[in-house]
Image (tube, rainbow, N blue to C red; front, side, top):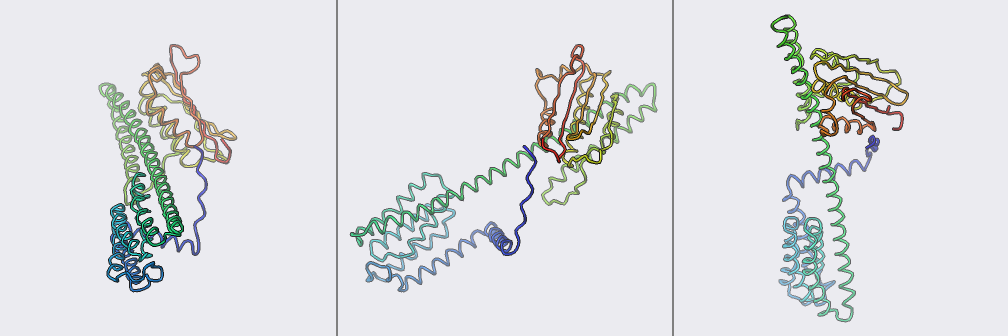
Length: 404
């Protein structure tokens, strides 16, 4: 789960031109598959008819075959190509009829090799058992023609042709495997993106709702004795709500299909003091040591977001489980090869966060975030804490100039 390798150099010159042509052809094929199928079928049908005009006699075992029969066999071997992708087995069955007619008559039309195209699509899109049916369609015309017109050298006609079809089948299987691998990569990437979005939603909604709940409770108690303090709590609730809505809009905007969302910067190390101040307004006493990043500190934007989210989750858990008298201490240290964030609290609700109660989505999400950047995250009760009091979360992220 290390950092991604640098991007490969972009293709230049003729290779870029070829790639653009391939991409454009694929786009046209995806948008109008019937047009490509009709074009390919027309080209091969025209070639078959040209051969039927007289060229077929160069390879025929019986040049006296009637022209109408040659024409019918040629059309049977070429026209079904239009359905080779949608119904490859049916197309191959019709073409096998033309191949059998060609073999029995002795015409030995070269258009018979067009059967390789539906065979390729059978290997590409159909279950493996369909290859057995394909073989049952291909072999009889070959064997029939060999014994009727090439009794002395039948193997020289059958074996090389079968090997050609085997190569086509292997090519189809290879392309199919590559496609399945690519689809699997897309599914894994989609699952990872869903997990990332779930973590972001959990962090944004869970933290801000906890802060709002704390502010609302404090405002309710202060309303009777200190209206000014209650008004401050309401103002803080409004500020926190607007911040949560802004973060949600940013997250949901990234999901827009047109890609027109404004990509505002994600929170990082510079926003940690504001995060702590927001939690303080919710009623949690926080002692924080958040020095400015050192000149040689190297943390990417994603790693800084991880630090921010881990601190957010840790303080949110203290608000939820620490109890009314809980205090939290936040320390951010810049070492020679790593950045270390430590969050401890004196809350009485540590047992509720213990492993015997199961790990919540927040703790799992923090560990996943740390692992994405070769970091580690440890959490658990404070050593020596009385009656299960106290909890500690420690995040270590290596600087990206150093190995983890």
